[in-house]
Length: 486
Image (cartoon, rainbow, N blue to C red):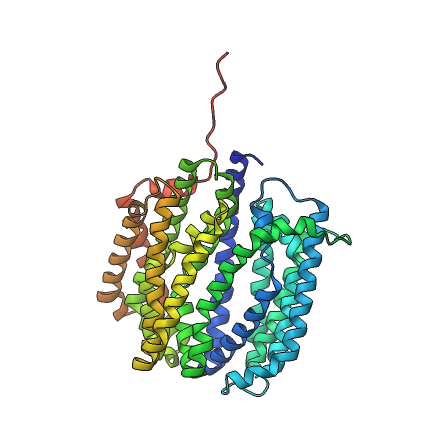
């Protein structure tokens, strides 16, 4: 696939994934609202702890070789794909057996967990095995930049998860709602991948083909493992030190504040194969990174201004007043997201040029910083101390990412793409704080207020950078070239 074709397909990928994100977010928003109204904050805390335990084991069942095959220019052979498939299945089976064996340990580490927690974790582990089975069709879809098919699969997964979770929660299933929803979600994902990208595994496990993939996959996976260790401070430390209910408020505030990261996820995912096509063209690569950052900044800073000015309205109207204690976490995580959205995009660019180890080394540093500060801050100031301490590494880590990116991508600009969204966010905050928050206390009026503030954000962007919206739409469109003169 040449660069022009890659740009065209990436443009379609952006459209498909934005539509997928919009559809998924409607499902997530509706499902989260229902679950937040039916379940208690402690239930959310228990789910966060069990999800952490499951993710911990999953890292030992993923060799990180998917990224190696996606970024490689030449297509993988059938023998390579079969070897990857069987390696992933074997690792997943080992992990599932281990989880079923050691599940009772969870109630010894987190004494506040309900007695059914070991069986909940065992049920959730089945989802991991189903996810592992779809690795090859997923790789083939992403290599071909078939984000339309990927979008369909992921929307169906999201819809299935929240429909099942909400129905079971309304029928009194409690925390089991999440477990069975995860299993059905994974089954639909695996079935969808094989239906939209049919592939039949042959019997092969060639270590000579797997070694170079694993060599790339290890630092790629180490980066994810470090990120997991960093995020573990909430379920592992806060879950034990503060209890399930405070952890539920912390997770709610963080997840709500990180809502715009869904857009960042879309841009990073689409940009990864596109950045890989431009790895030998530094100028084009830098411009592509700037475009991705610009789109991400627009959505991110709008949400920051919105949450900071209308947090009580959103919480009361959408989630019910019982979540008001989580507002401090919402405000703190929203503020730090002003730089926190940078690392996913820059990380995708570094992965694309074959340098995943850079982010991995930085991640080690900010993980150590996080685990050093959070316990002290929590001991001094409780839940608020945890939140503030947890924000420090996000700020420091992303500033370090900016410094690295300036060296890795010569000519890359940060201030120019960010200035208009920041100004727009300030206007959104001022209008929200002094005007809309006084009357937006019903679903209809809140929706109207959000729509008006979003228009303000777009108008500010258009006024300060008139070409940005047009450039965003045309960012990945190939330029037409005139035929050469005889």
